[in-house]
Structures are given as structure tokens and as C-alpha cells.
Image (cartoon, rainbow, N blue to C red; front, side):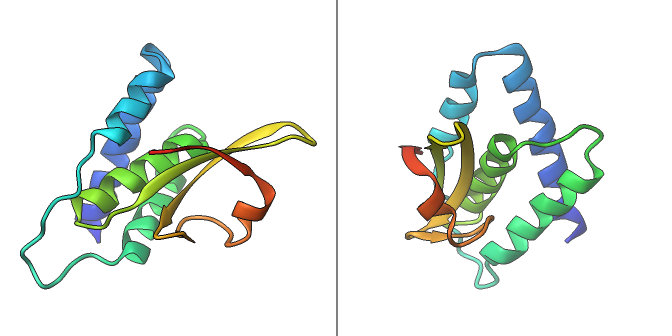
Length: 125
């Protein structure tokens, strides 16, 4: 778990760098191009364990981590572990706001299960 926590923390740093110094397109490209690794090991990290590690890294992170950064990190780590996760970006009209979360085959992994009912999906990557 310590290694996964460290990977999560470093990935949060990388993604913040992309958000701060490049366009959001850079973050989108990073998530979009993160392929799913074919893992030969029978001990795959569970999706829950990975999302928990990202959430824990967010607690220790020195700045506030927003949903886009957190979901991008979780999606990339899930894909590197052989799990075909998708980052979903949605919008709500009243009041107007955006949100991002991670799904696996239509099941929300890192947020409330009813988040899909609140936000209209704009992008999946």
C-alpha cells in the first residue's frame, strides 16, 4: 500500500504540473493515452484499493486536490494495473458546475453511485 500511495502522490504532482503550466488538453491527452497494461500477475490490485490510495494521497497532498486531478490520477493508475477504467467529465446546469469521476463498465468507482444522475456526461476518456 505504501508504494501505491507514493505512486498516487507523484501522479498528483505530475497532473498538477500539467494543469498549472499547460492547457487542460495536456491532462486530457495524458489520461486518454494511458493504455491498459496486460498484467500477468494473479494478484491484481483491486480497483477499490487503488481509489483508496489516491484518496489517501489527496489527504497528504499539500494543496487542495480537485475532482479532475483526483479522477485523472485514479484512471491512470487503474489502467496501469490492468483495469479498463474511464474518466468521466460531467456538467450540471442548475447551479452550473462541472465534476469528474471514474467509472468501470458503467459503475462509479471513486464517487457517490448517484453522481451519474446529477451530472450530464460531457466527455469520457
